[in-house]
Length: 397
Image (tube, rainbow, N blue to C red; front, side, top):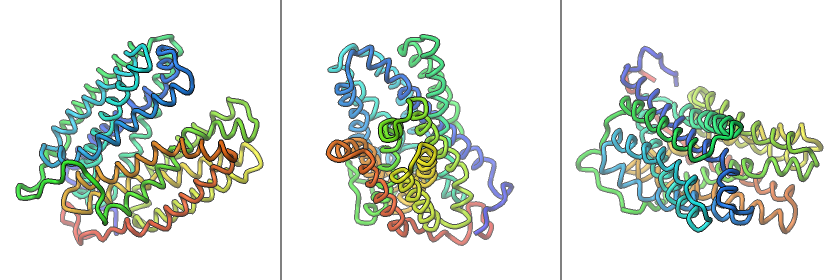
């Protein structure tokens, strides 16, 4: 399967791809902005680690509750308009975590914040799948790479704001306005798409069907590994290896950076080898990294292991969303169902890793990641894609 020449792609499709990538980046910047100011939020509310842990469950709960409802939103609305509205709502929700002065009020604020994240996430991924289908080749990995880049940019800007002693309320308000404006401008280049008039509306609450469930389980394994590494890698290096906090922090940044870089390279790899072979190779990479983390004798090997896990899981979620969009009669419904499964694992992963570490050790708990990456590779076959004989521009593939 050839990549196709850039000249074969209509200008409107190139614009739609760029616009969707910007939307992904904006979504990631909101996420990164909040994550980097969590210490300010905790201090402002006056909660310790236990209370903060309860509060930080709320975004995941909100997202999981909202995502299954988004299938109907995608079905009943112009996708371009829906993405625009939901992205503005997502940017505006960034202000919410900075307002409460108590844990009781912070929890519902984060619940709404998470719901806005989940709804906009499904809508932008549905549009990404549409663009990929019109392109006739893999482009989803690069879009998710833009999301990862957005997280890095958002957290970097937040770190600068914190260093300058800018209150999170001011920072979040300015960021929300600027990012919402960027999202509105970018959405002008999206595709105005509706399902066919005779297409059956999905159920109000998107539950995974028999064909969707295996795809979601592959995504579950990848997101579980991702969530565990993001939340526990620094503590692992610090606690298990006795390294200082500065060295431990390198585990998180190395993992995140490797994910972003691999996602930008992922589309070319998928076009060359196909989704099944790509995910199998990614699973080998991630499993090798997980084994290095568990057995590594020093920080250099362990941090390299986290980088390999980042590379290995990076392309899986984009391919899972793409496969879901090709399955069933309604892409929005399928993507919403898969998102609920995959992101649900991201919610429980840190707690499971912590629970296993409590009864055994953190090193042993990372053995679970090894098992998940192996299962991810074994399940790769469900992502098989038999493309049409012609791409969106009509040229032979």
